[in-house]
Length: 238
Image 1 (tube, one colour):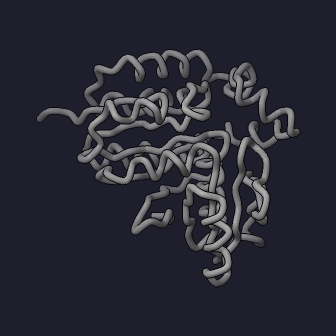
Image 2: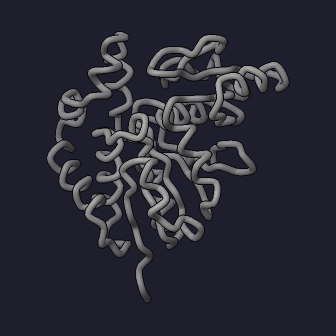
Image 3: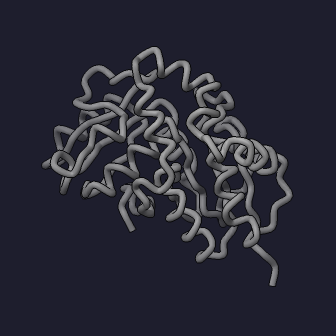
């Protein structure tokens, strides 16, 4: 029996090159949308509504009972939103049973771009194990989709793509140089991921806002090991 295919898209600007209708798309935005999503759902959030527009996020926050508006633009809390895009902002005592309405510069935008996918899940180092177990079990083609930074390649998202392939590669057919490159990078970085990732543009960008601990936290493997899936426009814990 033929193995399902696995590929990596290193930027949303390259998404049109991939046929995603029969694929599970893994949305990857390590710093920090998909890390925040995993943390919030693991800590008991009812659901997360990913929105690609700040005004729409604010509007939904007024309409949905027991909801929180959150997100960022260019790494900073966007004006009009209540909270930011940090996995550390959502302890169980705060987020449990609430709806998080979330908009971010890169991750939620890419999620909406992938609406034709067979399935959409979200991935970060915080839930790497759950993502890998699910992909193995489903036996479907996979696209590892990196949110990047405003369509420009970034290091951390490709490292996560490499971590996925390094873990589950034996279960898939791979002839994709993006996946190869991501895997080679991850194998160099895996013994000290946080140190390796500090030499990256996004780390340096977010460090200007004092977010180093956020990024260190985002490198913790399986800290919030839940499977996150998009169902009827909502991200929920499976």
